[in-house]
Length: 283
Length: 123
Image (cartoon, rainbow over all chains, first blue to last red; front, side):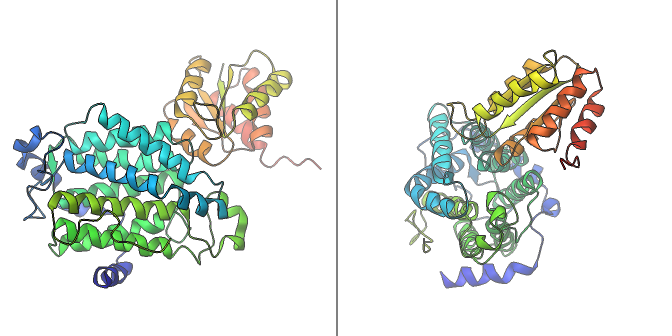
């Protein structure tokens, strides 16, 4: 894991995370895989285009549903850790709020899975906005909704499309929360993750490898919030006393990107990438 | 008449401020509280906020006054034509907005009146 981690850190200066409109035209990729649109739950076709990371839409609704399920399981497993982080500098509800939100997401998906990645992420976003209750609801909800909107109604999307969509999600979080990197927020995990993902896409890495690099960068980004002084949210009232604690929002963002890696790896069946716990980091 | 919605992290806090504002600002202003989660916990519910907006909308615009945290973010999700956020102290801004709305002021003037509360000194 040292390799991807180092690479992720090295991308820190590119500063291109919120200006993604220059990536390849999504429209063509969206139309390329219309035949995949009939995929149903339980199939293993999520990465049927795994060989090509650009231009072909290989990530379908089943993959994005698997991501949501991985997040729900990970949030449930780490609920107490997130709440403990939030009790240090927040109002001790982050784990419970996210658990409620993603449990509602899992229920919504069980009741009927949308056929396209865009519609699926929009459903995730709208459910989080309505169900989470805390500040992370509108923030993550906006991120998933904007990402869903960016994916349009394509039945399957490419890794480059996903990268672009997640950048739209990050832009949504930044706009709503007015946060920038260094404020000790979820942006401090998501922005470096997307820089790593963009670089991996440009290098032509396969999806599992690319998303693995993003997960490593998100984890490093979350841990880098520990020495920061909070400038947003309740923790900002603590001033210098917010230093020395990992930001709960950055921690949950790392978990969400890690869940994407787990979903992509599981669907791709890549050797050595079978555990939903990888890449693991200290609590 | 311009409507006012109080968006709070806490249901009882929003409801009590509605009571206070009605008493001081006037009973005629369309005013609603939207505090807490759907199940009455601490937090914010977009469903409660959008229901409150519908309830107070008389066609002259609606001012949202959030207190803090998720209230602000949820209110921002509701912004749109005729629905604006007043970035003001929760209690003082609410009283100013309700008094102004009760005088028949426009949406713009109600927001401006509320914003004056931010610099109004008590001593």
